[in-house]
Image 1 (cartoon, one colour):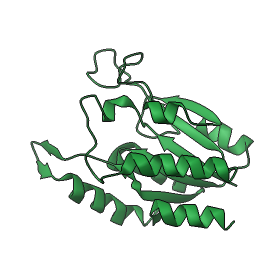
Image 2 (image 1 turned 60 degrees about the vertical axis):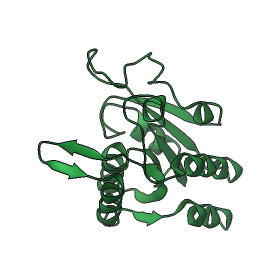
Image 3 (image 1 turned 90 degrees about the vertical axis):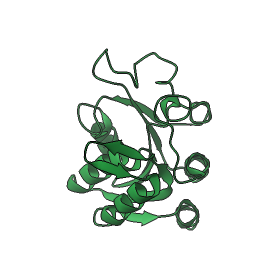
Length: 182
């Protein structure tokens, strides 16, 4: 059985300090995947991130930026799991929920491509799950630090290329067609 993981689609990525910029339309594709999962009776697990430290400038539990995006909040979900790490399995009830519901295939969408989506997909692969990674229903932003700069497009593409070792990387429309056909 398959489950859709909707990772960290929170206001921080829209009105907060980490605005997702690539690929265009990622939120629309996340919503499309959620709607297709509902129509095809695929469980939807929404994951919500909270910073471990009370001094973090992002994902402060209870803040407006920590809240789920309103379009995700209003859609059906089978579980809501809170996490404090990039990996959606660490110190959460995710694996217990998946095993309890007979899930062996995970479809990953959400934010950010290179952080929580990538980390969760790799961990799921290591735990023995079949993983699908929706390339246009994940997203990121450009980054700059003391090592250098990477554009949002370059970062997204690099993660998708390496993620293909752990997951079946596919576009949302292809995934929707696949689940409709059974």
